[in-house]
Length: 536
Ligand code: SIN
Image 1 (tube, helix red, strand yellow):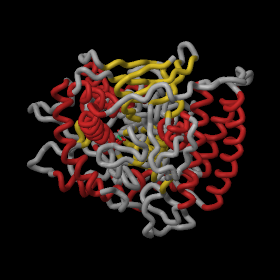
Image 2 (cartoon, helix red, strand yellow):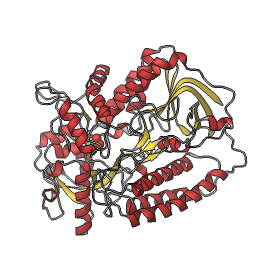
Image 3 (cartoon, protein in one colour):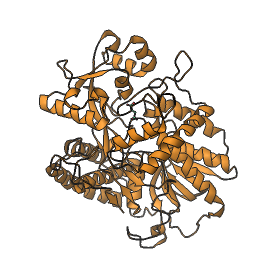
Image 4 (spheres, helix red, strand yellow):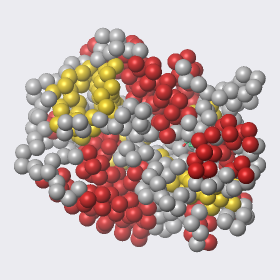
């Protein structure tokens, strides 16, 4: 089936929904189609606990401080112009979602309760209990529903970006003017592959944390947009910068995703300790448990490996009961369900877990990618905001600001855009058969997670990276063979996408012969002057 629309948005998190709302509002006669591969309540956005960083109390804070903190965390790789744009415009965008109904916690005096997280020099995190992402998503979905020119299709899994390649032309990474005409999409409810044609397509597909064994990302975080962009020969940058959140709940039974213990808990005074109850962050950074994430995650990794422990503790005894039950009700309940009662003085066992990809699809100031008529916003991008390490709670802000900017540029161009019809080849499934051993996909995914966690984690070495690449190559060959011969399934596509992500992370890590931000290679411990690692 061929579906036509004016604007196609892939992904229904903060970036996708805010782009849709801004286009729908300015262009009431345009049709905006949002695809989500599960249901609209599920996205990386939903899982964001801590909050959204923005300068709010101008008597204490200012844009310059937020810019400086972001640049400091980014360790020399941020684009200063982009940081300025996001920090300054972010304030307006947050006010806007408050007008649309997003709620943030307030103090008794009616002022917003501004939290603090690692790397921030001021309190500037607006939050709704410990489920800020969920609340923002709720308000955006409600707002989107008020526009009858926005349609959200659930269980539609985007497989490939349609370019000249699908009109029979030869496209390589050197082709100067690759164009996007839409995407091929698997309808998970009837297993058919549809061709969706759009005047402009926006990729808002989030990150790929599921490439690691321990991750706070939901199971949908399989790097689909970045992998599709790679296959379409688009520009991708800085994939080696994978952020590990220092404090995921250590659950001996294992769970996927790992439950996040928000950095806001440390912002309220919780302290990291080894299993024997000793503090250790003083050995690593003056900012102690509230140092930027790369530093804290590496410190925990070192302590765990040196001592042979499975986790470290987060001691919350400095936080009063009222704050725990009001600000962190879900964290409190989750811990209690595992027999850890924070209010009774139990400490929380924590481990670092993959949390965020700072690299991704290269975008300019308006979310334009290297492929014409294809835009991107949110975690799937590398906009220049995060550089080598993202400052906590800057990502929801980035999604809002770039959602607005992408919409702005599309709104200007929409009248002159046309749909390309007739010339696009339909999806060709000839000669493929149904796979009879789906278990092989599950096994390969598990293997991939082990490879990435063991060899391309928080601390890397040349030998580990080489070992990872050799093993990824084998998985790639096996999976491609399967892809050529079997009917496409979401599991197969996700595995294929994750293998691509694993390859890009590992290869970029190998190319970067220095240590900086989130990338630490003991064979090159110094920070030199390598800039972007680019997949053109
Ligand atoms: C957290 O709550 O610690 C996560 C916030 C973020 O990743 O920005």
